[in-house]
Amino acid sequence: MFSRDALSAFALSAGPSFVSVLPRRMSSSGTDSRPASRPAIRLQEGGLLTVIFLLGLLLTIFGGTVKRPEYKKDAAGESGTIMVKQNKFLNAQNLTNLAKDTSFFAIMAVGATFVIVSGGIDLSVGAVYALASVLAALVLHQFGADGPRSSGAAVCVGSATLCGIVNGGMIVALKVHPFIITLGTMTIYRGVAFVITTGQSVGTFPTAFPELVKWEAFGGLRLVPLLVMILVTIIGTVYLARLAAGRRIYAVGGNELASRFSGVRVDRVKLSVYVLSGLTAGIAALLAIGYYGSASSGDGSGYELDVIASAVVGGASLSGGKGSALGALLGALIIKMIDNGIVILGIDQSYSRIIIGTVVILAVTLDQFNTWLAKRRLTKTV
Image: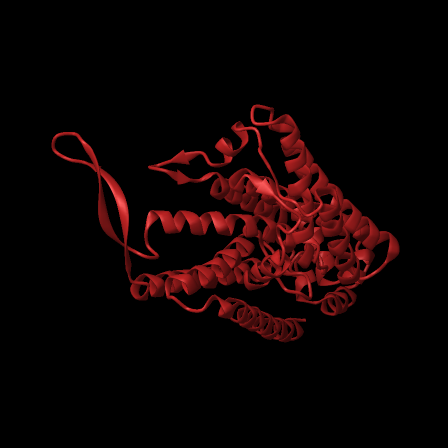
């Protein structure tokens, strides 16, 4: 059908992101080889793990100690409270809270990574989170303290997924840039949440629902948000790295025109990533209302910054074609470790946004430099 020279020219025009997700039968050697981008992704994630280790080490060394009450039994078998000195960062309570805070953002960051890899952007994720929260809270509130919890969960995840369908559907049908569409829906969704709650917080849920989310193990550690975050990350990793649908997302983000000529249904891919973004926002909202026991239209305000920042710091390229679910989780962990470190070190929290913004700029700059290097290598190879 096409000569080797024609395929080489096409691959060069498509860029390194598209080349890395070509089917294995199209590799230049003619053998069954893995995509060229996999070692680079592993290196990216290895670098993030190194940053997390160094941040944890610094906070452990310079964070200092704090006295916390601890229940212990004496020789007679009687329980009593004693004050135990613990490291501010490296203690079970702080690490569990860090994992919990990270989980809400990491779950949404996995969904945002799908969108960013495809070359899009979703500014409405915080508003979707808020709308799904209040809708589920209203349903749960109707049943009272002893009512069922399944209906609220279905409403929460279903409404968020519907918001994703609306976002993706308008982007595909109207051919308008995702930034404009999701900026508009961000305002609409939050406005709807405010109208249906009249700005009031909604609580009083079935007792079984918070008990499930706050289930404790290993001496009072609440691990459900952490377990859900890990599960979502594993599913996202398999989807992006192992399934044909994931390779198509990379292809569309790498070069949309080249993907169309290759037979990829671009509109279907675009719609799917916004549906997945809405779905993950719904899962995070469901965990949040179960953990905190209430919801309001102001929930998730500013979350879009942290979610997108987590994906970008985790290695997702805003130009599309690059990113991973594991990178999103690690990026979210870095962002929350920075927030946690500011509190531990006693720094004014007003500097939190400044530091996170600087980290995002550095991550984008590094991504641009890596993209430039990849294009240079591809040019020499072709």
